[in-house]
Amino acid sequence: TPFTCHPEPVTTGLEHSAFLKAARGEAVPHTPVWFMRQAGRSLPEYLKVREGVGMLESCMNAELITEITLQPVRRYGVDAAIFFSDIVLPLKAVGVDLDIKPGVGPVVADPVCTLADVEAIPDLTPEHLPFITEAVRTLVGELAGINGGTPLIGFAGAPFTVASYLVEGGPSKEYAKTKAMMYGAPEVWDALMTKIAGISAAFLRVQVEAGASAIQLFDSWAGAVNRDDYVRFVQPWSARVLSSIGELGVPKIHFGVNSGELLDLMGEAGADIVGVDWRVRLADGIERIGPERGVQGNLDPTLVFAPTEVMTARAAEVIEAGRTARSHIFNLGHGVIPSTNPDQLARLTDFVHAYPLTDDR
Ligand code: CP3
Image (cartoon, rainbow, N blue to C red):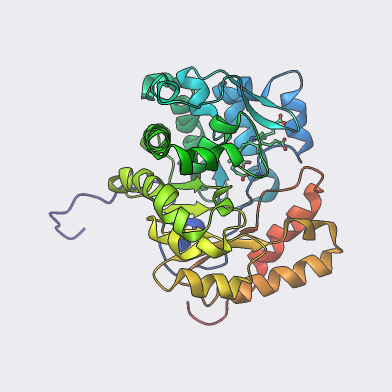
C-alpha cells in the first residue's frame, strides 16, 4: 500500500447509496425512491405490531420504532428508511399534554395563547429522548446490512407546522388562530417560533448524532401563508433549524404541501433538496427551485389507485422531468394514503429502479 498521511476514510457502508448520492448532487446509477408515510398505516405488518399500542406509546418504544421503520425497507427495497416517530413527539417528550388520535392527528389539551404559555414549554435536551438515540443506533446497524446499505432519514416538524398544532389545539383547515397570533401578537409568535425552532433543532441533532444520514424538515402546512408572510413569519425559524445542524454535514430536505408558491423560498431557508407536492408540474418546480438545489417528488399519491400501467406512465413523466434538476429523489407528492395497496407501491419502486438513465448524469 502506498504511503499516506491521510487517515482511512470513514466507512459507513453507505458509499453506494443512490439516495445519498442524489441528496449530495452526485451522479446516480438509478433514480432513488422512498415514500413519505411509508412506515405505517397501509402495511398489514404495521397494523399487527401496533395492535393495542397507542401511537405516542409506539413512538417511545425503541423496539417498535426499529421494527416499524424497517418494515417498508424490507418489503419494498426503497433507497432510504424514514425514522418512525411524529413531528409532535418532541413536544410530548418535554411534557406538553397532547395525544395523537387515530384518524385525527395530534390534539393538544391546553392550546398556546399567551407569552406565559410559550415560556412554560421546556427546552428539549437529549436526556428527554433516550429511546430515540437507542432506536437510531440499532436501526443504523441493521440498515447497513440491507440492500448493500440503506441510509436512515431523520426528521422534524418545521416551526410553523408544529406551532399550528400548539395554537389550534389540533388539525385545522384555515389556521385562523395561528394567523391571528402572527398578525395580532407578533411578539408572542416570535417567542413561540423561537421555542419550537430550538426543540426541532435538538430533535434533529439527536437523530443525526446517533447515526441518521440525512434529515427532512416537514413544513407540511406552510402553504397556508403567502410569500410575504412566509418571509416575515415562517422562513427565519425554518432557516434557524436547518443552519443549526449545518455543521453536522448531512443533506437536508425541506418539504411542504401546497407549497408551489414558496418553493424558491423554502430552498433559500437552507435546504439541499426541496420536496415538491403533486399539484406542481415537476419541471415548473425545478425552475422555481433553481440549479443550486435538488428536488424530491412528486407523483400524485392517488395514482396508486389507477391501473399499474397508468401509474407507471405518470411515474416515467416524473422521472424524465427530474432529469433536468440538479438531482432528483423520487417520492409521492405527499404521504402514502392509508388504503394504498402495498403491492402497487412495490411495483412502483421496481419501476423507478429499472427506469434507464442512459446518458451520463
Ligand atoms: O412513515 C413515515 O412517514 C414516518 C413516520 C411519520 C409519522 N408522522 C407517523 C404517523 C412521519 C415522518 C410523520 C410526520 C408528520 N406528522 C407530519 C408531516 C408529514 C406529513 O404527512 O405532512 C405531520 C403533519 C404529522 C402530524 C400527524 N400525525 C398527522 C397529520 C397524523 C395523521 C392523522 C391520520 O391518521 O390521518 C398523525 C398520525 C400519525 N403519524 C400516524 C403515523 C403512522 C397514524 C397513527 C395512528 O393513527 O395510529
